[in-house]
Picture (spheres, helix red, strand yellow):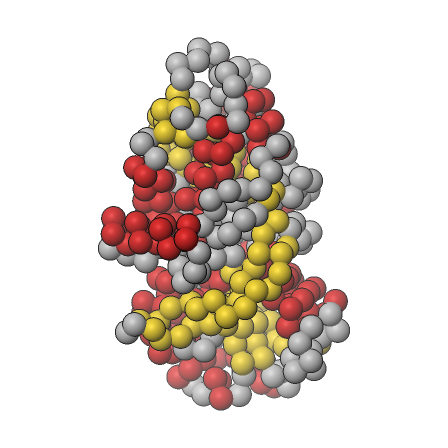
Length: 413
């Protein structure tokens, strides 16, 4: 997933299973095999599933902003059809997600669901989308299982799987003669997203002949002292660290890496969340020189991206985040898919349109396609370095790590 804020703990699989069983029972008893009304009023009814409360609310705000921005720039239409929006509050747990999904999938009879930040929420909502035959375009949730072992014709992801960018980074670094002999140490919070992300890097680096000398998992939501993890890297003889943290944990990790002198002994690479714009706004010079793998940067110099970033900053006086971009690109995908539909926007018509979408045109991250077998993007991964430009710290694009599709990494941590 996009990274749990540090106040959120992952749900156990047992609790998630209990919640899901109850939710499915209610959905099936309420509507059986749900068939939407079939009345074609020319509209596309979208359920925007975004956190409006709880610890994920900032992600939800970024997604809602980009959703609104896209529609405002396209006359409130997708594929020439008027859009009706139903906003659902994902909240911060599978419990809140299931409650919201029951309403938006069963009562509101939407054409398509888009959004979802938490992987746990995504895993809970996925079978509900299947029962109600609702195409679902996931924006952020990165669990490998969503498009892997639990993949479905009804589930498509426009962001990235947890392991995808880190695998590309590991593979690329192993191909560099001056880096393949460097020894890496892996650090992340101990939950599925952290485990999948560092495993992606390990797999890519080791497959290319690199060496990983150890890993250290911190306690999600309970760790504020990262010195033991960094010291473990030094003691293991590592030259560099690959780390995955998000939100306030990313900020604390970067600040301690710099403040306690580890920057003089260890190079630091990471997943994109480590230097998210929200983190850079507080980390400042402490983050300078950090390098991350990501599918996009606000500094990416393409006409589509420049137009998006300018419009976003003009509208909201803020720098867009990866969640902002992902939701905007979800609208690009839906616009292109709906444009190819003749007749009512039924679940079958929309799924067929997604299967035959081809190259996603007008994407702000550059051209990409869906992996036909796993519904993850086959896309370019960029190497970003934190630098100071124009009086602020930004993620400058310094390399192209090549294109990567679905990476088969799943974790039960």
